[in-house]
Amino acid sequence: MNGLDRRERRRRYQRQQQLKEYGIIAGIALGVLLFLGGVSLLSMRLFGILTASEHSPAKNVEQKSVQTQEVVGDVVETFGKEITVMIDPGHGERVPGCVVGNIMEKDITLAVSLKLRDALEVAGVTVRMTREDDATYPRLKERGPMANRVKADFFISIHCNSYAEDTSIRGFESYYYDEKSSKLSDAMMKAVKDAGIMIQDSKYGNFQVLRDTKMPAVLLEIGYMSNSAELADMCREDYQTQLAEAIVKGLYNYIKK
Image 1: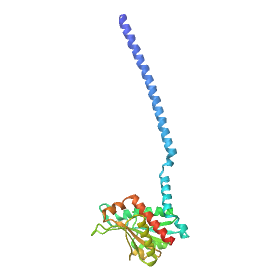
Image 2: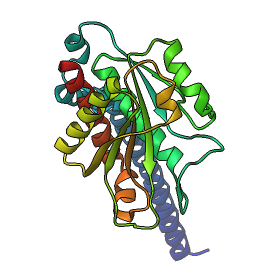
Image 3: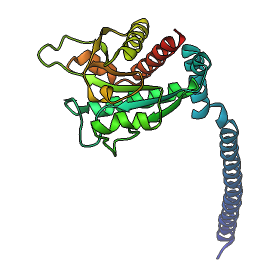
Image 4: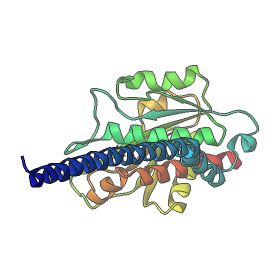
């Protein structure tokens, strides 16, 4: 092996050592970057946890509740005593009510009724319901007595209408059975109209759920599922909330008189 070969081997060896050193340095640098990235991610997660309350659904619900209370006022204070309202979401479980495509009346009535429950509770009202989900179906003859047993002050039954012979017909309707309920029905119609919702009339209705109740009671047909535009509205959550708040306003106006 001559001197040239030795020099060449030395240069190769030196390059190999440099490459090893560069590899070590690169590895250290990568480790540092990964560590810093982990710390940054952890910090972001901690920040998200600490600030989550600022964006939590609870705060949104609270804010919405304040808005609702501003709309309806303090119903209990106006009435002068605690109030119990029985809400009756029409149909349920195996009885769908009106059906348009895959949209069932029982689902709309339940959605609106739950929003009505929330709005009433914000106003300080005690709420009972004939059903709170789609797992049960109280029979018609059971619904009025349910309200009587808890000594409810008011009974509100929620339904949807339909008239296939004329799909242009639309609008909110309220039915009552006796004189003590007719003024409540009128108050409901006025509040709904004031909310900008199209209405029909306040009408006498010989419905079992109204006959069986001992307190002022109304059956509210909140819209026509046979009208495509009104059906689309009734499926919208913001419209359901608008309906619920208008119904509470109607109750408030009735009590105020």
